[in-house]
Length: 69
Image: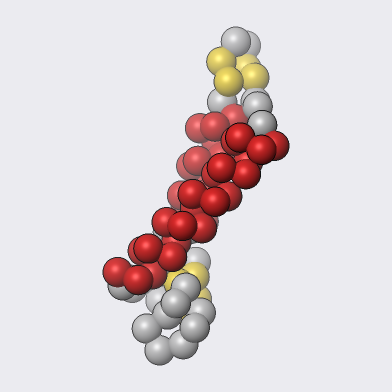
């Protein structure tokens, strides 16, 4: 059986936390901007830290597993 939990969690978080796609934190003109399709270096750093924190919580602390087969 294959464990698809880490793959699914990583892909979903990557799509949700892509800077500028759904939201950007910090934005260019405001603290949070939604759907502006732009990014900055500080925004990439903030989203990377959030991604690392959430993926650590979901995969190591909670231990999400999705088995197929």
